[in-house]
Image 1 (cartoon, protein in one colour):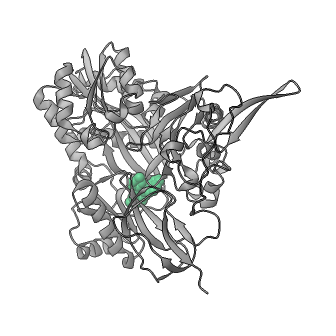
Image 2 (spheres, helix red, strand yellow):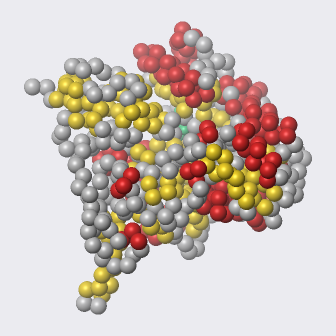
Length: 592
Ligand code: MV4
């Protein structure tokens, strides 16, 4: 077994990996950026090395700096977590060459699954069912037209270098194919330097069902059952559960076999996930994630197997600690991703400083997080604050337990998805096991999640330390009440609730235009980012919901649509403009 392992990541997953290392008696080495000097994962490690400035290309993605940290620390292995370098075959290969163990699959398996067209080819050859469509890249629009005719509309156009929904477009009919083809190719080029796309039959309202696999270096390949991750927003998973509501024992055995066949076909080693779509009882391979995933914890809860520990053992050459026949699934687990995002404001990232942080606890509750009170959620990285995972005997009990734990969770200083998750857990749609797409796409439903009176725009840096929400305790005739005060910090401290309560007068803020509510003419950007494309001109007449521009933020394309019908009277943006949340994108005057 290793004696020292470097964790090439940050946040909750870095902490999660270090916990596994501690339990195995292995020393952990942290790496960090200048933005993460005070981060929890840095304090948690026995030893920590600075990589460079905050932006990931200069720190968490800087392979040369990482190699130096590995050498200086004497680590024998590297755990990449998820994101950053986790699925970078060149990094895995470089470690191999340096004689450092990569706690992940062989570089060749990463590569095979990294190209989605290659993966589809390999899977088809291995007898793994793929979504009907092309396996060879589709080079031109003409080729796409021919392929789409054969597949039948609607078709999904996907970037070959893609995954997780990046470079994914749908064409409902032939007239929409050009936009879908060009959009997917453009995103493929931008994110993966590869404009190649392929086509699939578009399956209406499928479930996202994925299977966890583990493979050791001795030919052992097992699966740990499935997870349902259908509750997503712009391809970002928000809630995951195990087992999947629509999978029975027979289907589980079938998709488990599909998953282990897929892993064997690429000589897989380590922990991996076969992602697929379940539509009308049929299961189709989508892609393989060659890493530990965010949502691995729900599988740990239903199987009792520590997936990260298995990863480390496998990389050290040890055999799997369980055989397939010994994998027993018990009860039901749910995970909610508690992101610093504003669900009522288009799920815009809401970075800032956490002024108060109280985690839930009690039976069946697990919190994986990389923060504590006073931590900063920097705007540079993924805005996940914590993962809340609960386990109980069945889905209904687990739902009640999740609702209880969400109520116990207190986070102040940044907006989070806590109100969103509370509302989903209380919904009939969730109770019925639906994908909740109708709720997630319902602006009015989302708008009602807004903390009443809270600000429209994210706080400016000098306002950041203020809480959005604060609880005070008062006694009225000897009876105790907790009063939740929402909005700006009051001018005078009410009681001793920490240094943040020693407030200065709340700064006056101009109420800025907003995309929700109101009948104003100004269309405000719901988020901070760069204008990537403008689709209208000044003077144009637009319908409500018409695409005005695309704002790129956190590497995602966000479509900004007209909040009302009318004429574009002002258009103060152009391609390349940097916008902040609340900035005016366009002024749309009503037709006379
Ligand atoms: C699809 C699809 C329908 N047909 N592919 C790909 C990335 C992942 N985030 C969702 N993806 C989809 N791929 C074909 N051929 C529909 C989705 C999809 C989806 C699937 C299951 C549950 C929720 C979803 C939300 C958006 C898109």
